[in-house]
Length: 108
Image (cartoon, rainbow, N blue to C red; front, side, top):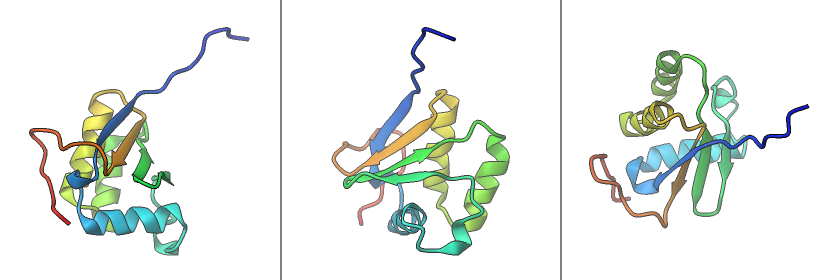
């Protein structure tokens, strides 16, 4: 038995870094509204201010292809990929967080 606590990293960014369509897809996944998304390697939790998305430690290339084929924007995929590059297990998209320089933003 280990006595150490396990801590996971989370990248927190503005919901302005993904599209309105991404937001609708995340809502559909979070609330299991669309069975067509059940195959995705994507866990989504609503927060009331956006969503928390689990970033798989599986092959990022395969997961990004899966996300693109499902209809997620390139901006969303870039943010998920950035989280993995930073060794984050989660991305928190929050409407109260300011935009981050260097990433595409959307006004919806």
